[in-house]
Image 1 (cartoon, rainbow, N blue to C red):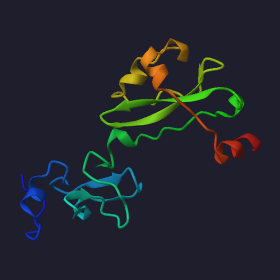
Image 2 (image 1 turned 135 degrees about the horizontal axis):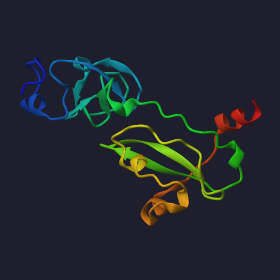
Image 3 (image 1 turned 90 degrees about the vertical axis):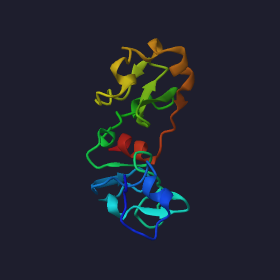
Image 4 (image 1 turned 60 degrees about the vertical axis):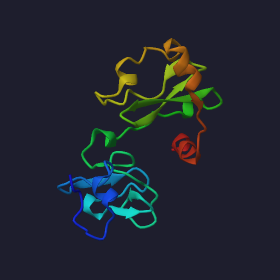
Length: 157
């Protein structure tokens, strides 16, 4: 399937599975968080790249997704400030290469974040009631969460 009508493009650009969709549609880039028409994607360095100048996002369905894709469901963190000084960790809930950090307090054995709400998310579909009930692999793959200035501002408001 030819994806782009520019005759100056090499043949591999037309058949690249990560090229812009045909017909063009509204997309959003994971790297720059900009929304634009997929026809603006550029062939650079042998890869289809984000159409926003200076952005390092590449590939449709790698870093660039349809603007209405479930990947963009907003995920708001719960408030980690009551757990300041505790072992606050994050585990990733993922689906089809995308995902979110899900925070939990290992010290208190409670989830800080709600489930992401995406029906495709295998982690949240089976997330246990308490973090301590996660699989050994999920617990080992969790990472320490460092509270930043935004978290501190929330605490003082």
